[in-house]
Image 1 (cartoon, helix red, strand yellow):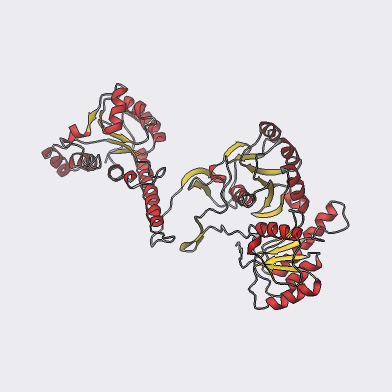
Image 2 (spheres, rainbow, N blue to C red):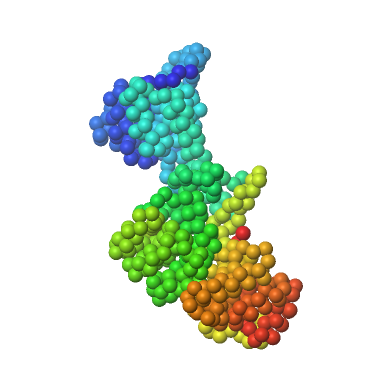
Length: 516
């Protein structure tokens, strides 16, 4: 095994032509012979780079519409032969196989356009062969790797073993990700949500300072094109942390549920205020009123272009992150005064009804489930009490239930006027969540100088059924006049009777929104 390997012969066959000409020119200038195929060879010839067609090198023409052009002993033998093995070298000489020292290949664009003809066969074979023999062969699979390899060749007269080993690891990761995409596509064609072997891949977006806590390492990977945190452009502000990213994703997914201007304020992945209104500025005021104490240092998501009026209001308190599909130039200028505030622009909103899988790790494995894209509309509701909700109550019930979907279980959401007025999240007991939400409403009222709790005259949403009447009774005691819940408890009759006794309206959805 040797450390520095000079590049005397390079095979270049790329789908992505970015950086192709400078790479070949530099290799040729260093004395390397360039082998190439099809479109790559054409581009290089037009740029004045001396190129030898692979078919000329092998003495065998491309056949089957180009499906077979590099799957030949003269190519794979040149890549896989060990330079320190006398028997390998003798066999290569006997069969007229010349060594290939560098392979630059990127793959047919299957990820961009799913079709059988875009499934690359020769490319992965070349990449894997070069990576296996990385002690002697340099493998390049992405244009952003070219400069590093060329720098080493210019400095050392060849590539170092450390670089070749790193590139080999990246090469296997690339083909693994490519195959994972193809496997997922085939599963989709079969209508198979959970195939026997499930593979998925991500591309490193950012190495983070640490994870949930400073003693944990962390990184951020992107896996697809769904608009959101992974696709967002960070316009300004400090580096995002693990917790920032997690909370920002929760906030953006929450506002994606709504078709009208909506603002969500998130703390520790739980909403502390959500509101819909005619404008973002009004929605912000209403969302902030729900829990102004928790909103300090929170994450803010908007489902409309951020304007100057909303930006002025949001920056009046400490805010860690703002995420929106777009922002006016005037809004950007206002946010620029807060140097540490992160502004993320996604270019669009995620489709709340979209399918897909979500994952969670467990010891020795992971759990996979379809995205919770459930949505409850007015026609899905079933009135189970003597009194039916009013039109105003119905609108607030549907609003509250959509917010409830994004609150950690056990979840209770009080709402009034398309705004949350009290939220109880993540309690082992549903009645505790109801009491906490009521207490939040009282605290918010005191902060606003009001004598009446915000929950007075509100509606309440529960993410799952009330197992006992006590949770509903706590909500009614807080001032709620109507309740939305899935139903399905053994004690539904008791719960309904308690509502009837208080003159409250209850509707069942038949849909549960647990969020653990």
